[in-house]
Length: 112
Image (cartoon, rainbow, N blue to C red):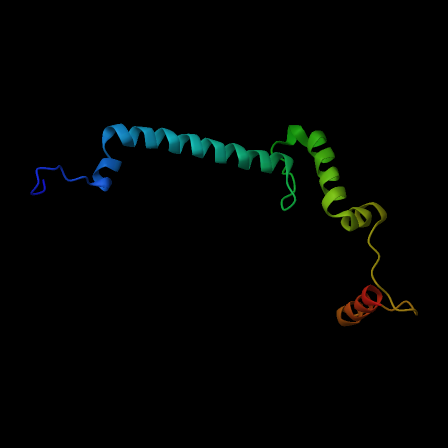
């Protein structure tokens, strides 16, 4: 109590009283469920940063189609490598390129 007869308002106390804390708990549950649903959706369908995950073996054929679509959309070079097979970079005589030689060659072809 203050000197003027007004009741002191303690926001920390009021935040944990039964009326306000019940409302906050239900809001927290709603937010938690929404976040959980969004994460589940991202895991199943994928997004630009994350590929779709195989959640159950029984869903393999469905997941395979989703994964193929995801790779074709977000990593087309990788999809071509999967379909055509990977060929190691070689020199004109057939010797394998070192990593340094590969990057120098790649920079020259990309930037010229």
